[in-house]
Amino acid sequence: MRLVIDAMGGDHAPQAIVEGAVMAVSEMDNLSITLVGDQDQIKPLLNNNHNIDIIHTTTVITGDEEPVKAVRRKKDASLVLMAQEVKAGRADACISAGNTGALMSAGLFQVGRIKGIERPALSPTLPTIDQKGFVLLDVGANVEAKPKHLVQYGIMGSIYSEKVRNISKPRVGLLNVGTEDGKGTELTKQAFALLKDAPIHFIGNVEARDLLDGVADVVVTDGFSGNIALKTIEGTALTMFSMLKESLTSSLKAKLATSVIKSNLKQLKAKLDYAEYGGAGLFGLAAPVIKAHGSSNPRAIYSAIKQANHMVTNDVTTLIEQTIASMQLNEEE
Image (tube, rainbow, N blue to C red; front, side, top):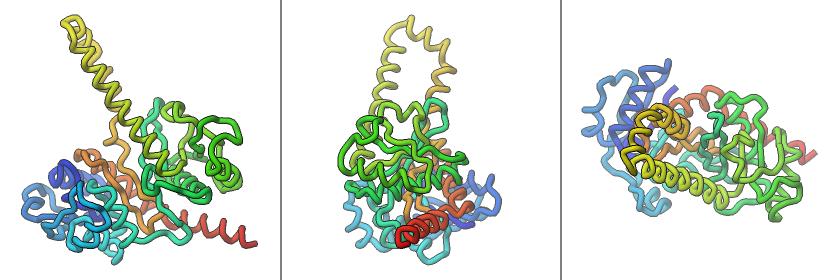
């Protein structure tokens, strides 16, 4: 298996990306990685170049560039060359911690969509109290969606959760303003009816306040609501940790108490660590495309590589295509 990675994307590139890649090829069998980026910066970081190749380029798409224009204008950018490797069949999947919009554009233009999937979905795995996590999609690939798109999201999330996250019969919930049937907008009402007949374990409507309690393994929504939910969760977590830190360092007594529960605080932080969950999959593309967190450290890159590896090994893309095709055939009959 060969994966290709944008070595210049992210806040800590290329060091974090290279170190994560080295970690992965050292621990995973039959894995080869192509790093795309400035070889003068990458080579000094390769203390183990076994099964790691480099495609050299010094062109990078930055985080503040307009995605579509940048992808079309910068044909030799590391992110664009990465996607081209997948399109040409020289790599099975790709990973970038760079510009999210540019990655989505490159994924659509170069990798292409799965037959039958109208709109890909950006889907991170978020932590829950029981540490199992849940998949949320879409979180911003498409601001607007139709009911049938939410059904496709549910199918893709269910297959991913079962084959990659090893969850038997994943529970799929529809994000809504209440748990009762018939709640919500016309979009959610129509999506609810369609999801009930989809080949998934649909458990009905779920509320945002219950997401981190593990109410569902897969939560589907439109990209507008999903992005707001994601940013709210992230912002709340950051604020709570900031308030906790301020409280625990406010006095000598608090500092002494903190020293006693230090290990417990580390455990809490580990439960919420994005590095352990890999990246956000761009589900619905013709090959696995993973968006790693912009501030990814080597461990997060390693987790994203592991995630992509599992998606390729379990042929998630083909399973999604076959499921969608069977649904369309049934509709025609």
